[in-house]
Image (cartoon, rainbow, N blue to C red):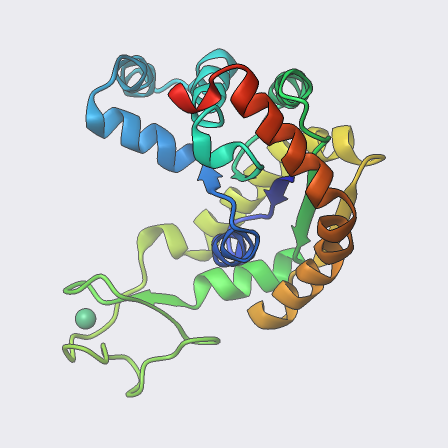
Length: 238
Ligand SMILES: [Zn+2]
């Protein structure tokens, strides 16, 4: 099963991504995290990405596509995977279609966490951080025990610059602009819009409700195919 998870900053996408991946026993792959890891490890790919970003540019489709293709050919992805932060452009979405067809994997299931702009701004601007231990609090969902100070070390909490209302609004607007054409690309496929302005547990329950019938109906045949492919072309050796 291949899942694509979309959601604006502040939608709780990271939390859901981890829970879904654990539940299905597939890896959650974040292309943003991968790029950072490649750069840190100093791989040729990381070096290329680093020089692009140092020049203020965005890492291009070609590089991200190559990185993704390499990652999903790892043995842990043979039965499927969850993608977070990819595809970010229609070109990447087309590339992914080709890649999945090549591997005899089914078309992806798209989960779109949709949260109204006001709710997102409210959530993100109520974030506070401890400048000493870096712990993140949220005045709405996860407030400190004593208002204004860190539970662990008593340091006064601060609002990070990128959590100011102006910056938050701009981040959401950019996300929306970039993502809209990609969501449109998937609209008439296995596309599920999920209301993200509810508790994480409630959202997770809705997601498992969507996926459960698909797992029991298609899971076996999809995995059998992946297994057959794995043994026929020495997949495990990669
Ligand atoms: Zn602290």
